[in-house]
Image 1 (tube, rainbow, N blue to C red):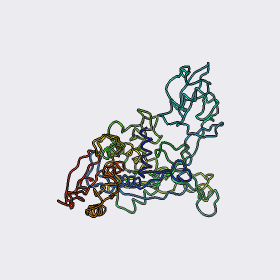
Image 2 (cartoon, rainbow, N blue to C red; image 1 turned 90 degrees about the vertical axis):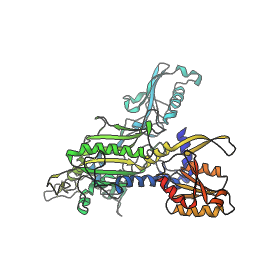
Image 3 (cartoon, helix red, strand yellow; image 1 turned 60 degrees about the vertical axis):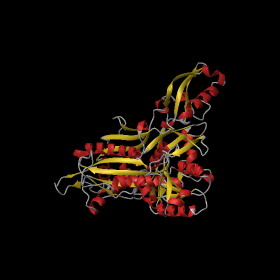
Image 4 (tube, rainbow, N blue to C red; image 1 turned 120 degrees about the vertical axis):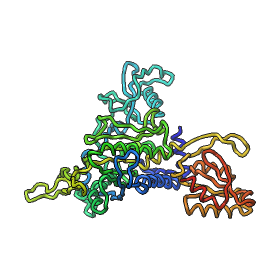
Length: 535
């Protein structure tokens, strides 16, 4: 229910809209409205400021093995196709999907859940892709229909065990698909590559095929030497990047949690192999702390270390920062950010990765002997320490966050309902977005109590002064109580009201969104008061 209310509020107040909504929408794509674009930009700016701009490389932060440097990049969305061959995405970047031969619908294998049930001497697995809060009702309804039972005979259904993933089912002939009326309509799972293919150039042949990047990380790896040669950075150092990525998800779902176009905030941190475990622990703890500092705290946020069976073959350690989104079953968490110790896999892959002359869009240079001239890029991506003379391939720690998932998590955490008295003392339900002031789309709203007696003129002057420093909003329409409520839903932390006393003593009332506390300050002190509290 909270998720439905949040989605409604996001549309009503201009946080997010379905892409191409007037044409029926496009699944997996979302537009950010006037409030949403500010919220997401504030999150990205906070990340860049805290990770890059404000980083002090002169001393080692708490938990860091040594001092380190940070810099940034902004790489292209389309790169040479060989990048994706050597990184493994061309061959390995896929999800498993299943099709329903009866409904002609397609599902991601690991997103189909269900339960075993027995009735009338037959045992079947009833599958569903309905949101988890409603999946019990969905499988019950469909089981009754399959066994030709009425709702009053629901006790005749003998359920066996809890909901489990379709991945655990070996015999698909006993599965009732999510939109099927008969058993055995689902195909065996098969691979589906998630990269979006496009054509570069005017010829339009298969040799001109390229791909929209599925992650921003590879642009950093292929520019590793460029950054070294053009700056004075020394290992250990990190390269940060914020940018769009694209994945052709089989079944996008859960609002903006799983989209086909999304934005990443990634760091590739290069370090000496001997100190890499210490850096992995540092970045794991640092990234967890960043979320708590901005308001994600308590039992809904966890840091989970992957078991050995979950990790990639090259991983030396992987942790996820996870959040208990409202659309997930109770006790389950969704990934906000992954922190991975990738060893030297990526740089070595781009030095030594094998070419495939049969891959579309991958032109292979041949030597005089007719064999591929280079393996991978053919470039030396090792690092030479100019002080010690040691030469090695750095290890990489990768904190990879989703800007859209972070935005969604902050919205979920901020959504609150409480009861407050109205102007007549009657309790009313108030919806308030308790966003941290650093990321709130609007920092302050300015109201004249009434549209006369010079109050609007004073309020506009205050608004203009604040607007030079931070996002502000001016509103003179309707009762002041309703204006407060609108700003509560927008997440505005402070409201400033110009009233009758302003004309007497040149002070205004400031109201705190969360505590409802009110206090008076001089008109000339409004900007500094709000700036100090926002910081």
